[in-house]
Length: 174
Image 1 (spheres, rainbow, N blue to C red):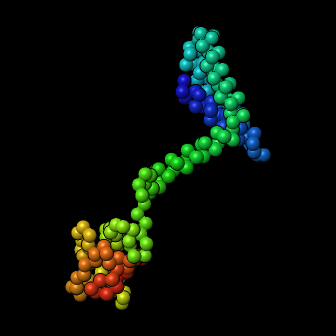
Image 2 (cartoon, rainbow, N blue to C red):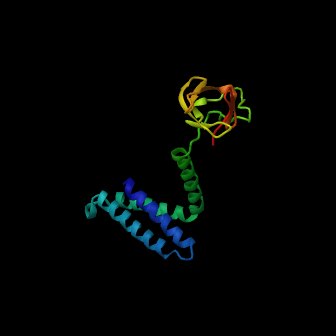
Image 3 (cartoon, one colour):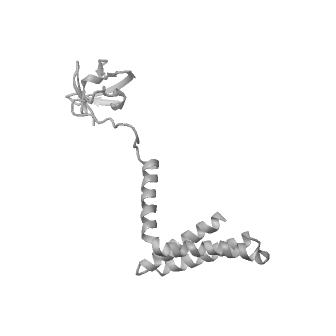
């Protein structure tokens, strides 16, 4: 029965969309088709022509209630569906942590916590645009090396924005 009521609800939304738009004949047609499918599903679920008439009448009354309520509450229903869709989209596609304080760093990386060096890219560049590749991340520091065999350690306290001041000069990333 739930499927029949969902079909009825979707049919009501489609019909109301057709009513509220100038070129809404497609919405009206889809609404009628979905309502017909919902009624047929309801009739078959309660026993077809051998169904208890009171039970059938009550269940068809629920469809009528859905359509009448939808007629008066269409704008509110669309608003709630929009809000629900946005929240579901944020949960599925967003990278948000509800209930946790975000870690926004100022230019000095100081917000009371140390910068997570694992967020520095694998390849960084020095002042002469020579590449340095990450060898590994070890807690509060990361070790980088270049093609000349030089090695440098970037500590979390050295990071400022998208660069770090190290013993090998300023290393930056994009």
